[in-house]
Length: 474
Image (cartoon, rainbow, N blue to C red; front, side, top):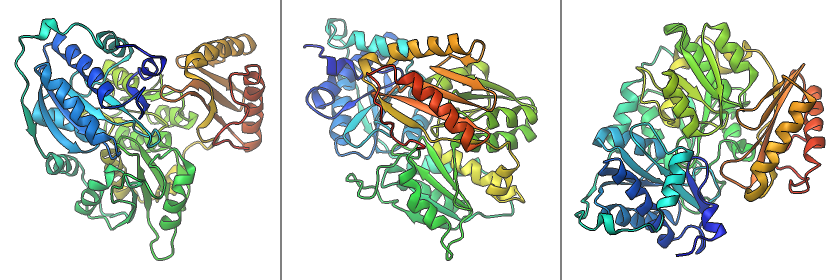
């Protein structure tokens, strides 16, 4: 079968994502891709896999195609149904399966789908693994002809997962009041019970799964999607201590503080890391290039070892395990807690519970606690359209431009993070969408806009990059 440009474009840095249509993701192509993944597992002697899916209209049929492909190659399947990515990872431990297929496109729009594929516990495929799966698509089936069909077992792990989360949380004297926003995604199946069991009064917002997403698509990075959450947190009859939002597959968290302010996840990571460092001084904290300078300072000021690394959940997980770090995270909302606290994968429900636990022992409100951190003005994630087939080459050229202009001031582990006297700016290629991601941070809004102008001027040299930026600060 032909490998079209549309098919090829789905194989991204650390997962596989594409639009739902006949050229990209349809049951036939899902079968082809997951069959290649089954061959990847066979090469490693792995014959057990968990399969789960997110709350999209296409997901059940895609899960069926994935199960068929796995079983045909002798993989025994434990099917857990509608779920979250972290619950799928938990099920690997619970059911002792090194393989896993989570059918999801995470925070991508509802007309997208994809897969998160596992290679062991708390490990998802990295770029070399993705390339290997791609090379195995439509490869010779003859070596697998004598393998007996794998078994299929349907299992419900919801109660075991909730118990695993709740049992690891030790609440203090305060019981924070919470507004929980699932955005009609799958997190609504879990979050209400978790926080009720922790003794919190909860107010639910769009916690019923709905494949039409009638309000907004669940993406904690989208400021528009947080407007209703902010309204409920600050409502005079609610006076919540926290607003917690979750993306569609439950591995990314968004937070509104008691005053209605948005708190990016790098600052939440700083707050949780500060509490962890009080118990375990000297631990390593891994974070991506999009994170605030405030995080670096908080970790250092509290005796930790800050390590900046590439954006991407597989990259961060791999670096976390390489350095034996206790905690890691990304500004986009992925936070990983490991060590003796948890499994080391990105789980927004568990992270939210750890945040609530820390707040339950804190005499300060969350806004008061964070006000004691170094303060910067930070932009949201700004998006500039740029086609997939040219975006990486263009970013390489932009990196060279900034290095020539600002020698010794560019961190290039993932795009260009350029340090200025009063702030920094970042440009990198999105791993999931045809666009560039930009973030700016400075000591004042005026300095931030000045840095933005420098980046705007550099990017304007490339007609392949859209002049209009989405989610922009101007």
